[in-house]
Length: 477
Image (cartoon, one colour):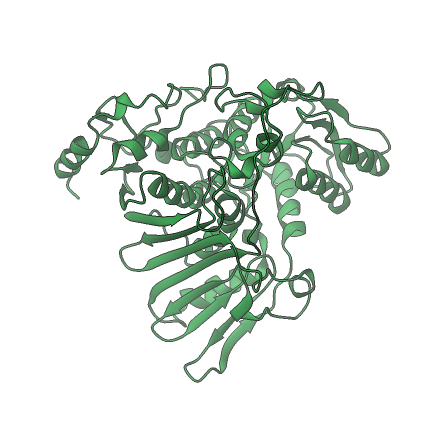
């Protein structure tokens, strides 16, 4: 699109953007429509992307790596234990969580492995001041991912951050910019990029064995339905710093539902099935397709069909991404007791799922053949018209390889398998799906060049995000 025509189309859609009271300031990212004006340049982070970092601060292959865990729930605890079991020359100096009822298991298991207990802290900023810490593992609720990662990188720490890696489109841009400016390793928790079988699937598609790709179906249809009953507001327990837990999110009274079931609220996540589950499949689909960039439009519909409860997020969403030369659809929800994820047995042996009843599959339709692809070690198979298998490869669960890659990159300064540039692009798909739904189930036109929504002011304002005072993203990285 010519620049003059593009600016004209955006200016019509941007009227009134500054009028929405829900956005209380905060970030105004490069390339975003803000205050009824359009930045005529693409996001500035793109000119700062580096293919390699300086090796001046690299460590030897056997040098000790000191880490800290931020967010000591079940998954974060598992990451900490795995990183120590996989690489014996790693120490975990801190376990950070704003909730004192969490982290005990992590501390006990780490002490068993390294002979001394890590230091428990509530405020992650105390970790960033310690020059001995090389990197951090961030496994907080999603609304903290961006700010925690940026603070860590500004303090000279490498980062492993769980998915969905960002909370808004502009936040992801800032994360890329910080990683490049401070030359920090940022490994995203999209671990399928460390699985060998996915590389072979990518090569198979690249050779043209499927033909031209026309359609891609991505699925995250979990077991269910599961009702939700929101608990009443109550006084804040002495064991938690609720203000720190909220961080960038709006100030609200304490509720155990928000604290423990945060995936049901827009203030803290993009939904359990979409931003916490399907992000793996979205990222994997992009990976095997050669990492296409951004779609030119997105349409998402759905709703709370099964229970009339107070949950923010829908129990089903159907999203269509238009990539111009192919279409990607995404189905997410929790209402299919007859479908299931690939079992641990499948993920760690020479077995394939029963594709018909696999709830997390990717189907890639070419003009010659069709590929069924599973995440987290479920492998892939390609079928001919007569149902015969044209090619296949078994998989293995990739978490071990992914964590090893992170620690190796801390030492070598090589780029990680799941770096923030592609992590940002995959996360944008999650954000666009939710923005389309929240804007009234409306098709949103998106500019891949400028990374802005061009036809809906409300959605574009939400895409920029808002941050509570004291927890704003830095204007200048």
